[in-house]
Image (tube, rainbow, N blue to C red; front, side, top):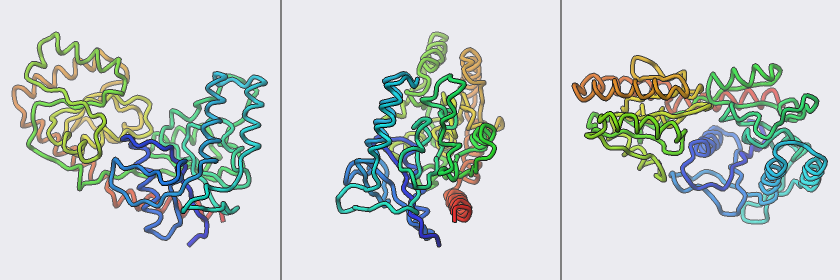
Length: 364
């Protein structure tokens, strides 16, 4: 097995965030299969606690601070590289060092260590930690060009840097996106897994409609109010999936008959997939990355941002459900079986191991 250590750069966020949970799981899978992997947080002793984990965690105040400073530079100057912004970025890059924090997880970075970055750190990402190979774990393909500008002469991007050895994505749509823009880039798809111990079908459905209140709230408010003023929601209860741990989310979804998806420009779209695993009938936007599991035989896809069509579709679903809920229980069961088959934990582990074997075999 390779001697390379793999560090997954992860912000210190301890609120339910599917992307971070996936990073933790990927580190667990790699270590289980003989790799040497770490989550890399900023603060010593920090780890996410909203889901159960014993993931190997290290920390680097320096590296994460430099990353945050890089984002600040982009934000302060609106993504444009005027002289002062360029100077600030150069200063951040110049002062970067290869030593992690002095604590019980103290690690001196070796030249063969690989750092895995999120996709949102902008065009100069590869200039940090020069000399070390890098991978971008792009969980949001439509965020690939965050902090870029409209300059036709600035070709700075980590995707064309020789130290970026691969990009990892989470859906076929995301793989197509990155490969189309950077055809020479080595792009590997990891298939997410839904934990069937928590997310599983229940036929004990109530007239509850679940949704994520932060996703396209402007569309959510329109759809709900259209149906409210048509008198269609009087017997229904709205359930916000918000500020819940993983178990609470699963428990809530198993009671809900419907899930409203307001995903927009997603790499994959975990919330509707988890809802389907719990037997919810999903109505709404696939968010592009979710097209591969938004099947019309068990859910009701709506073209992105078509609010009126969304409201009309949901109206039809609610009227039909109120008349006879049995066909919807059957759809929910079918959705659950599909998701837990196509996105099993076993499949996730298999694709993670295959992905990193390919990356490291080419790297060596």
